[in-house]
Amino acid sequence: MLQIYFKCVGQWIEPGDHVNVEGQDAATKQKFLQTSIDVTREEVEEYFGPEGYWCECHAWNEIQNQNVPRAYNSYRSKRGVIQVACEYQILIKDFILCEIKVYRLI
Image 1: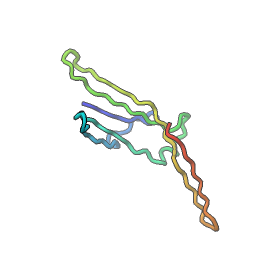
Image 2: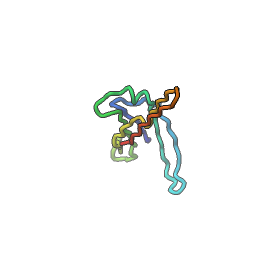
Image 3: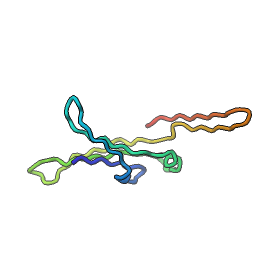
Image 4: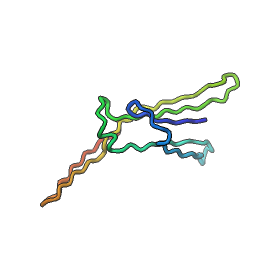
């Protein structure tokens, strides 16, 4: 059975916070599981760790093998650092000040 989990800033994300979509590739007929999580602006802005707010994906699948009772394939993604993409400040007086900060996903 395929399992996918996320770890963000050293903490495992609860499975109830995952969004799972099972499907099958039309061309290859291979089944897949796509998993995602939502990270809020507040979570990113409130974290002050030295490496920034990061997440990584962990997946594993039990191998069906008669010679090995419990064998697994496992995978850990590279860390993705999450930063706030846009920040707007609007002052309503005689003018509107708009400050935009754009970051890239590392």
